[in-house]
View (cartoon, rainbow, N blue to C red):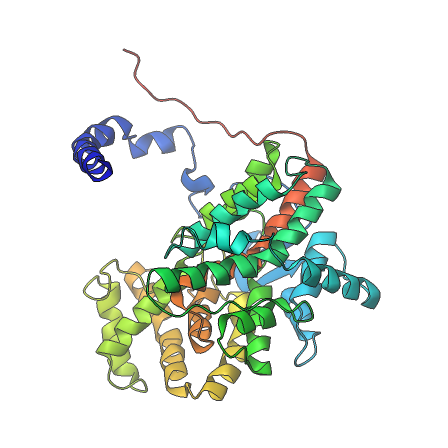
Length: 445
């Protein structure tokens, strides 16, 4: 009966699609006529100002002699350059928890405060009794983001104060979710590979004494082993992904849902639904797919001429997915350089050397050299194009043995910190629901 109903509904909606397209179409000229910025971006690609924040800052240009001039990108967390925060960590120091404290509380912790917070995170890194069996294992899915979102909403059922939106309680819920996200991601993947791919399933319990990055690697690997370099690189990736201003799609979603008075679990589930979109958190997967395609069509990774020929085929819609995009190149905000990519690249080199992946690294570096000029020529523009953090993050996850199904989930494990900080700020600073206006252009009948 279910299959029959689904077939009938599919047939019906295919026929109705044309009617929807006809009646929902809005002429592009109307957006210009009424001064409406599609995607909340002006004609220069700048985001429309919709709020204020103390949490982070993104800089991509300066005003020089009254003109906007692009500069090397900057990312600030609570008044600190992200390069400074990462650079001040020890060679093998795990900084995720320390910088999570900074984003949540607004100031760097002293040694005692950091130790208490790390202990709190470690102690909260557990799920309710039988939750893994009864919730995660009962409905495995290849889409780990969907699996995690379902788990987040279900966790509300185990919280007696789920609807309490007071600051202290919301902060408590956010800290618990930051602690639990690695488990939801890894266990969701374990359930999928066991039930859907007939692989063995090994569940490792987290170690409260380990950092978030160390626990992720330990829980993902059957032998629990990882190197200091691997842990440091993953820790750095998590720090660089944990926050990126209030205007990115998932963080704006967090603030919109928070402003409605909704609870923490519903808010984070909404943010997850935003992040999983391929235009947002799924970008590094497209980079990996593109790189695999390039490997299959380029014989010599040192031959820039050969690489350039194939990149031109990609941008001319003759190769790969034929969309004319070189993935991992360019950013909605940064043009000269993405600060996250600049920081990350040095760690990528170290890991590639440890893993014996220098040949692959050379391919990435050659594409990084060639792609910006090719893109500028195609677009007939002098505006600079640079690699973004997604260009290398998929390569790092691959070297760490993290499966593709978990790539966007790794983003979520990091970004839950930024979402939490913005939720708390929204609760403290305003009691107004975010309600933008849409102008009706319908014809009266």
